[in-house]
Length: 303
Ligand code: SF4
Image (cartoon, rainbow, N blue to C red):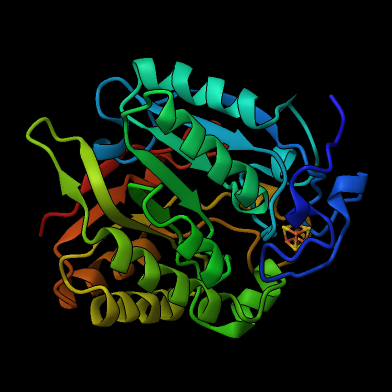
């Protein structure tokens, strides 16, 4: 399978806010470490997402290799830093979507921002061939507003991170000082497109927005500011996952203040803030079970 020059956006690539201009059709890599043809590191039924996403049959998750953000604490370092896995074109992706759609509650695209033109074609093609389950778009939110607008009508459920509010954290942890400005604009557009999360009588999400926030060690004040933004801009009925699964094992500089776990006190303080702000649709995780080998299950915040 060649690189294929047929998708012109991959020449002089400016798909994401990095705007590095790599000629991915010629096999060059940009910041995302990806040429033009997607590589799928893994796909299958995934049961570790929030209950309305995983349901009973699992979420049909497609993990894309490469990443345009590359956070220093990334849990998926092996696949975010290099091209690895099965190389697919648009037709290959359509086949994967249709296969997963037969057995899972949804199709869950994990970190596909750097393959946007291919993903748009594949979603459209799969829907034309009868795909009927919701499309979940699982993103760091470091995406251009134009990219999210291009997904209008194709994505049913947005699963975006809002990682940090401060430009200092964006710079230190993700080499993206503009992270919050970019991500917050993207999330507002997502809400506009799909509204709040709608869950059917079986407890399965059909449409809407579910925001994720990972608590960072030593940075609870920034988490508070993220939650305040969510309450003020998405509303107190926003569906939100406050995640405890920060894994310092992946931080290379062992002297770094980020080379430790989040303490139970820090995590509880962020949950208390959510309650104080009146956020009423919050998923939580059991912090004591957080490790590289195990992603803690989600529970509902009840206080
Ligand atoms: S998608 Fe990749 S190559 Fe394109 S601008 Fe972003 S980081 Fe650069």
